[in-house]
Image (tube, rainbow, N blue to C red):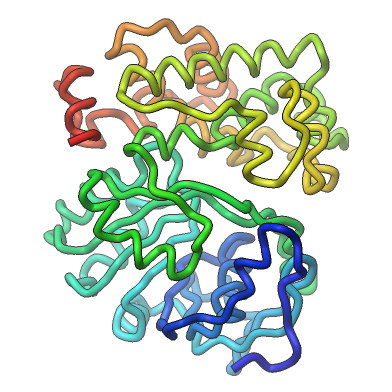
Length: 378
């Protein structure tokens, strides 16, 4: 039950979100960051029972014995939780549907913690899985002896930020997005479950279609590198509104072409980046720069103030590395992908080409491009 009057502010897309749940589900939310807080409030607002799980107990210490979360902005209200803690056994016992809201780089560690307590009645839904995240998790589950656990992936659907008082400010919803599982037949099987929570989601053409339809994967790392000195100095600027000029946006447009070529090589097609932003947030659909500068939510998006940002570590490791390797396998030139991966590797002192989400980690080591295309489309 919701403790006090709460609501999702009515905009064209979010009205669909405000519908009450047709069937109450006991949901586990794995994570303690921005998306985990916003998703917990969203699910509780729908009437579901939400258990918030963090791998480290101190991350939830502020919740106390009667855990509740408070949200403002697009979601408003105070939302009691059914529980919160760091015991994976209790999480698995109480909840059959588990939303994983950690960074994508943490997936192997998360599965290592959860797998001993999972069974075929559980479904994992990955938020912001990046490229082929559900396949990586599926392989981790297989190695842990739990191949029967279902895995679905989508993108992070909230633009949000946890505030100093531990409330979460939800400044935007993505009014549209894709979901999938590793194989098309699995995607079809799980459609009813994920659309129960998010009716605006649509099935992806295949696994690569889902992972490449991600504006963060396209823009995050490159925007940091284009503004590397400002980020390193901690100079304030609006990440999307001011991150590019009419001259430098050509770099982003070249990377977009590489994404589109990669999608085509593996049997799918992408919306243009400006169309994608319009489907997300409603904006102008002229040039890419116009689109970025007209997203209402982006007027609040400040740039990171350090190069130790997930905009490099997560997006390079979990999106751009597998994209680069898939491009090479298909015989595609990818100068922007190659440059971004190389520069991020140098700046962080990490060989992301070896330590990132490689084809070997996905179980595709030794596959040809044609074999992978058949795999994701059959």
